[in-house]
Amino acid sequence: MAKQDLDELGPVKKPLSWPAAVLTGKKFIDEAPGIDSMGIWECSPGRWERTIMQEEFAHFVKGSARFIPTHGVPIDIHAGDTIWFPANSTGVWEISEDVRKVYVIIDRPSFWQRLKASIRLPWKSWSEPSGLPVASAATGSAAEPALVWHAEPRKT
Image 1 (cartoon, rainbow, N blue to C red):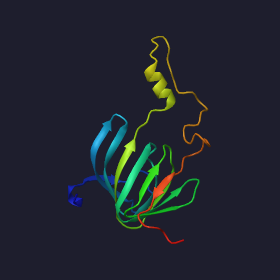
Image 2: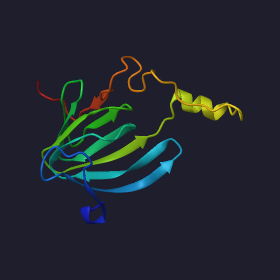
Image 3: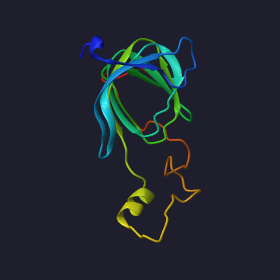
Image 4: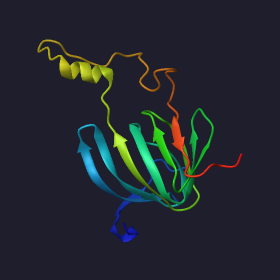
């Protein structure tokens, strides 16, 4: 899809550089069951905080970038690479050149949301229990990108 066919989405939400990186894209699915959105996303150079808190699966088709997880090792991403972010992944994006990715934002309900949906008690008001880890089940801390598939082996 040509760049002129993408919609202007404006600047990133939490820029850490000036001028703020600018987003363009095209959504092909918006709020289908289990999928928050799916489409093409393109971004100009810049640095900003990641604001998507749902699971994300993305394949980069153009450019290069670096993602620095809040608690983890920086990840260099290039055209041809694929990445999966678990829910609640936090960190900083550093885009050095225009990048384009195809993505799916996955909206999986929590255990408590599924339970609430399956058990409808008219006299009971349900809410998510507090104090339970909603990020990483293993650590309770912010999730880190768990899987990265590089198009070609990287030299170390």
